[in-house]
Length: 153
Image (cartoon, rainbow, N blue to C red; front, side):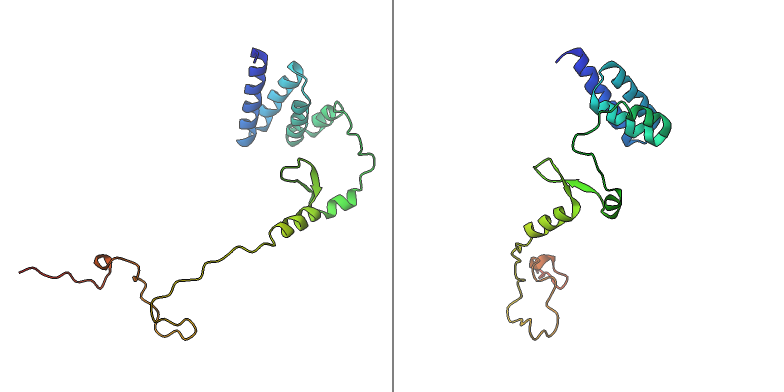
């Protein structure tokens, strides 16, 4: 690993720290430095998103430097606004529509988890509950509130 790679990694970590703590202007400045020195696409995307929070006009200028995505020629804005967006599917790494994601998630959770039956004290019938069972029944005798030690004479 070269010194340039180490510096780039450190700068990315510094940017993520600043974003976590609400320092958007400083994070945007660091992203500008990353774009100038390394020219990475990830840094340019981060620069656009952070400057959009601070200065929209500046973000639009940087956004024009991004390459357009292939396959996104016609976007139906109204259908996007009606849905809550897209989520990343586990393991696949591809973006899925939320409705299909929720349906697949519901199918996966269709299997019921086995639930243990409660253990009742001897002679207790849950169908005809009388007085409530002693709550201290699982404690050792010495730790129960009704325990009275025997005296030695």
